[in-house]
Image (cartoon, rainbow, N blue to C red; front, side, top):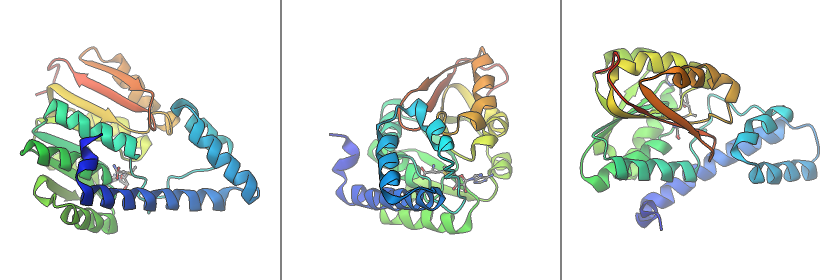
Amino acid sequence: MNAMRKNGPLAELLSGLHRESDEEILGKARSLFRGGDEEFSRIVKEYGTLAPEEKGKFLRTHGISIQDPSFSLCVSPEMGEFLFNLVLSSRPGRILELGSSNGVSTLYFAEALRLLGRGTIVATENDEKKCRRILQNAAAGGLSGFIELRKGDVFETVNGLSGPFDLVFIDIWADGYLEIFRKIEPLLASGSIIVADNMWTAFEGVAPFKEHLDKRTDIVNTTLDFASGVEFGVVLCSGGMA
Ligand SMILES: C[S@@+](CC[C@H](N)C(=O)[O-])C[C@H]1O[C@@H](n2cnc3c(N)ncnc32)[C@H](O)[C@@H]1O
């Protein structure tokens, strides 16, 4: 059993937040899809069976774009548990989360920090309503002490941060991945872990970031074929980094 599920009240909070996110996406997808209900149900089922690498292509084929700025668009439970386990195993003192939405991934990170008994996650989000939800969810999960929220445009926010961060999680809009990565590089150090979501679902948008990482000799990285496609990298040495 994943230890995440042992905290009953938090597991219940997260399950409600995942449900809310799924309902937003399904509602939007249905409104964009021109066919009937039966065909829509078939497509939803088919989507669930697809390999992660096929998912982005599938959505584009059916003209379904789920990048609505008001939506939660949170990580899946599977991805959340991966982030949680990653923190327990790598024991980062400082985590930087780029794109926190309502704070679902933030909660997975923070719960792992709580179990470790130390550490901070810097959460970043520019949507005022979502920032309120992060604070509410952090309080409801009893995790406020591990979360430092920075409101505003993350491209500005990161200018005011000092490193190093042991783990960075990139989950803003896909076309901003490379630009934000370049900005946060000075905040990384040898051994820092880089995780980026949506590598398959937003394949085209994240391509410049992926190409950039693949060319770097001071970073090792690979795309993990699960959830929405997850880039996993580690900084090897300090070429320009702290
Ligand atoms: C995919 S969602 C993040 C989901 C979140 N990690 C979770 O699992 O709950 C992307 C978020 O990034 C935020 N975002 C996008 N561009 C941003 C920017 N320039 N500054 C701050 N937040 C930004 C969006 O408002 C959105 O809430």
